[in-house]
Length: 237
Image (tube, one colour):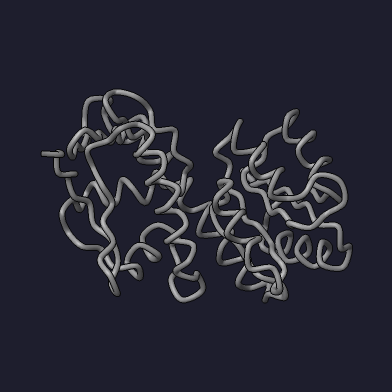
C-alpha cells in the first residue's frame, strides 16, 4: 500500500519541491500551508509520516509537533532555519524523530524519510513474527517488551516516542557496554553521516528525564568523547 506523507510548509516553492520529490519516489502526498490545517486533517485521517516547517503562519511547527506527539507516534521530521539553532533543539525536545536545516538537498530528505518508514515497517514485521511471551529484555527496573514495543519501569509504561524506544531498547540490549554515538546514529536513525550527533544527545536527554520522573534505578552514563552506556545507579549511603 502506498505510504501517505503530510507536509506543512508555508513557502510554496519549497513545499512543491518536496512534494514533487516524494511523489516521484512513490509516496502519496498531502501538503498544507500551515500546521493547523495539517493537524486538523490528521485528527480525521492519519498518515504514515509528517514533515513540519518550524516557522509558519498560525501555530508554529514546534507546537504542532508537540500536539501530534500527544496523540500519536507518527514519525515527524522538522525543517528548521539555518540561523535558528534552538529550533532543532526544541523540535527534538518536543518529540520529532529527525530534523533538517534549510537549505537542504532533497535527496537527503528522501534518505531520512525512507529510514524512518523502514524502521516502522521493521517494527510491524517484528510484532507479527514473535510470540507474546518472547523477547522480553530486562535491565535493572527497566523491562523492554519486544511484543508490545513498550519499555516499562516498575511495570509503568515510560511512554517513549518511536525514536526514544529504539534508542533505549538498543542500550538495554547492550547493557553495561559502551555504545558509540556513530553506532547509535546508524542503528537508531538508519543513516550516519547525514545526522548530527546533537540529535542523539538531545534524544538521550529526553529519555533521561522520563527515566528520572519514573524513579528508575538505571542511568544512561555519558562516556566522554565516545558515546553512552547503561549503568545501575548507586544507592545513597
